[in-house]
Length: 234
Length: 332
Image (tube, rainbow over the protein chains, first blue to last red):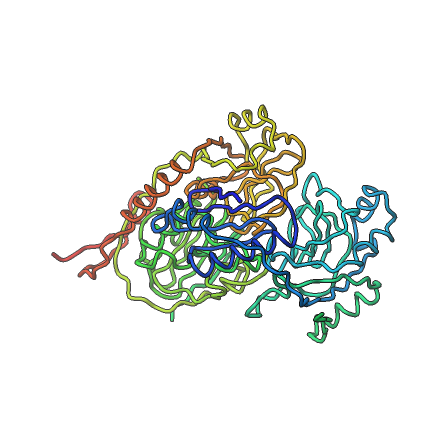
């Protein structure tokens, strides 16, 4: 674990360079400790890092560093209950502008890419990037594809993408560098809700392939507030 | 109640304050003003809490009609403000009379001007801030930039004083940065060139990120990292080698290798750059960065510690050499 100053009022706690359940548990542990005990300006978690902002006039970086370093982390027992949220996705070419790039890069045909993408349950490691955006772990390595060399200035809301070893869904129109392989009509972010994000750290999601007709149907239901998202607790 | 009618909205005029620190875990960016010093000075000039919402005006300023009397101040870039067509200066309290029209004749200096009001603006306060987050359409004035015929409402304060504050002197073309631990991902020769070249701000720049044209930084291998939180000022370098500095509306998490981060004081300088402007980067360490910040905070405190005690004054407005001046006569 390293604690590194980023600028005059922030630092990053950097754990081992991997995406794994073990590191996720460690991040959750340190994140909870900092939020509950240190009362600093802000605290944001990543897959394997935590960014903390402090008040330069009231907090000493050295003191905070020492407090965090003195924590005794013991590996926790793995949680047994899973909340799985099912996300419907249309993988038709019209919504999947980069699916060819992913299939070519990995020497698979498009159908295989879709099968591999929909066959797993993904852990939501964190919410970030834009409001409601879930960072997911557990993607099949055989569909990993590097991010675009030049990120796009606009990717439309609901797009499902692959960036390196990661997969995720864009809840809003934003710039981004991920390979777009499908689209969901479901809304991942709503500013009118007290908790604006549909998903949270620790949930699991599963992608379900739908047809274009089903996409249009669900899109209507979401607009009318009648769509019921399927959730399972295992 | 007092009101202001938007006659012309300007290019991008939004309500902003300090921004949102506590909702980044939902992926909501900090937002807030791009030029913090200018917001602080503008609010001090009208007797407001330094973190009160202001209008951030970009490039082309708005045209506003004041329905009631109040005081305002304009700070930051010089967009050539005028009251009823007559030139007025930045960095001072301006006494506004009912039916006055504030307009801007065009960009002279900088890029963003800030308008503060002595009365309290009624706006959407969401997740601890009045700042407008444009991408998700919430906060500030209906979650969007101002449009023609919008009506801004205020609750009245009784403010009657006048001040001038001169902004902190700074070298706008040197941007000081602290290097990231991912520094080793870049070719050394390329890094040296980065620190010794001029960079031009590209047109592809906004409140989310500022792109710079110049020497492209070469990676030793991958440009991707495991996604990790960022702060405004973080410099991301995708494979193309073009530096992107993440700003106030930037995504909370980034996935490209980072060169480093701009020190917080120098974000104000970036806020006043327009496409085509040139800068150079200068590498400094944490200790110096913190000393700079502490000195900046001290200077802001000194400049904004004004005497707000009510005085027995009468105000007049005079046009001298084609410029408006507020004149306050105090009985002693």
